[in-house]
Length: 105
Image (cartoon, rainbow, N blue to C red; front, side, top):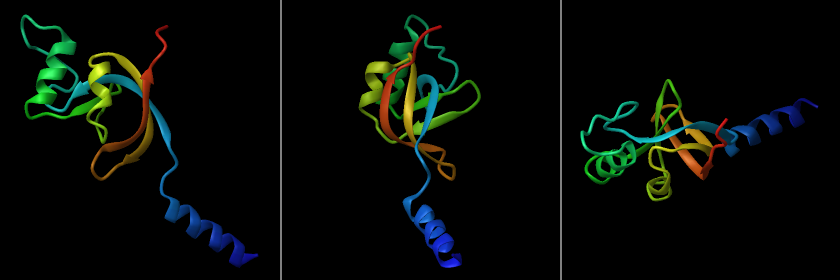
């Protein structure tokens, strides 16, 4: 029995963290929570900053998480989304499995 428990525990560690769903707004690593580019919408700001030297990210209301996928978030710039993936807490990066619009309530 101890062998089975140990085997299952080792398998869990090898598989990595279980995927989670994160809800927030697509932003960029330069601006984070606030976009102050005068004359431009937040979506324009996110796209321009990500194209410059920033990266697409997710702001959940408290934290800004970098996203491993840097193509899909472009179509959701400044929009509320659900991101499915695994969080690497050391790099504060979500390994993205999927991104979809979040329902607006």
